[in-house]
Length: 251
Length: 251
Image 1 (tube, each protein chain N blue to C red):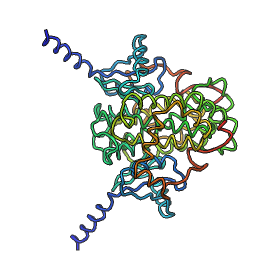
Image 2: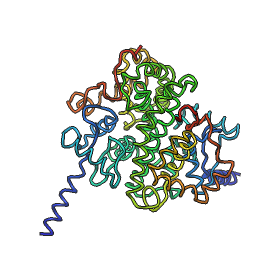
Image 3: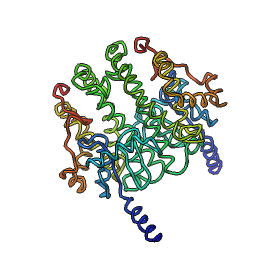
Image 4: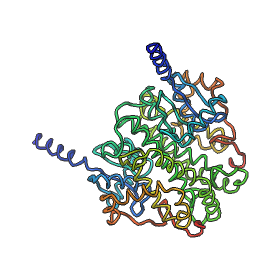
């Protein structure tokens, strides 16, 4: 009996190598950077919180307060380990999914770029929520307009100019060289998101970032990404996510 | 001749294991989380940009666009490697300086906590710059007041409540157990900074976070930290940094 039980545990642990992603259902949000990595690699994963039971499980894991509870979604469960913070999840997945170099220097460099993208994502969120994440957009329209202005005048040129330079200087097809990394997938998502949220401003700005646009197109053409984008696993952009289309912020 | 030259190079490389920290002179800012780790560990480091020549070198390294240029300070040079993003620098230093576990799961957990602190730091910055980092505070006083209100009503309880729970649940002297990590040093800095920037609000809130206050005091009493805080290497808080004392935001 004992040995049957042990072998049952063994089977559970075997199955548990499946990746379980926990993220708010209904939005791309920060979960999308993880989804793109899992999809590109053809990894076996479940987007847990897209079912009602999964959503309840996600809330329980955050509220339990025991072990290593994440502060916020997304988080990834792999066997018994729970990993939170988008860039940290990608750090973990990168070398396992072949989406980052294994040597330490390369690994840290790719992670550093992802952390810079994380800062950009926070600033994108602040364009519609400058007075804070717990207030409604409708109550901060004026400040959102000002923040969006500053974002496009100062911050977009600084961030995207930085990545554009990198794409020019390394001479490879992808940002850090010949091989695709999770950073390329995230930059694809940034371009997609800016096109959705600020169609006019983005169109005008694209001429300044030909390298990034070419990178975006290269990522979009990859078979697994193409199949993912056409599937119902890809949630549509909407006004609950990070990238929101508010016409008044786009002019 | 050739062999003398080689031995000279060897000496340079030997010396270069000294850590070179590059950060804006005159403020604690994000550089402070790195300084605290280097100081606690008694590491040999130079705070390069505090000299005029060092400052010029820092600007050149960012503007060169070659290799792995950082997006912004702080960054750390170790031999030939340049590492940017505060949390990434601490990830690199953590296991080397004995300030983080070496096994992967523990390393990722401590890094995840640091990334959550990084999010909090950005929100602290937004209390005085809700309309964006390139505008003057004087031009955004009204929105800053609103953002500070939201920060103290919603965000501080959420972030510090999370860390307070962790400090209670693990039963050790430090946040993740018996051993000090760089996360403890960073939480010390958060408490110090909030006390500086929002003395009234922080005083009222401290009764809700006895575990974090005890942790703060334990860090402050460590000999290397104590010596550092009393030295002129510790820059005083001021209104160019992340934590700014604007009386009107503290009531």
